[in-house]
Image 1 (cartoon, rainbow, N blue to C red):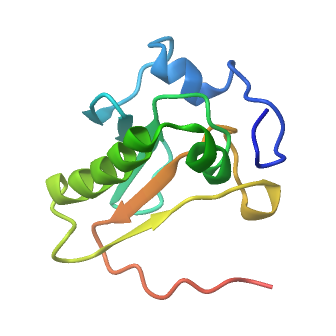
Image 2: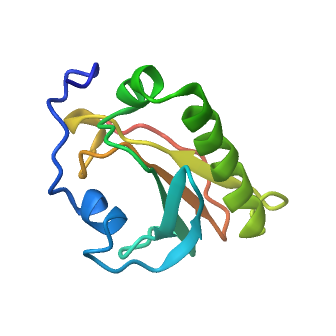
Length: 126
């Protein structure tokens, strides 16, 4: 059971199906820790999703259940992907949405990498 309180992992979620190769994705990077691919509905010129290879619903679930090497490998891969996409110098944003209030649409922990244009300040709406 995930520690996040979001419920059990759903093996039929779209990211699990992408990881299993059942659904195609425009892959940017893959290693032993992550799969990264372009978002099908990009919110910026560069919009890449990075998902860990494992059954994790949230950051809390990932941080507490994944081996330390997987957690470190995930974040190192995120940084490497941003560098490979040449986002380091101009700047980029990493966002993860956890739970319904944050707008998490897929119950598989993931981060979004946004870049390719000035993103402006991130301001929460009321």
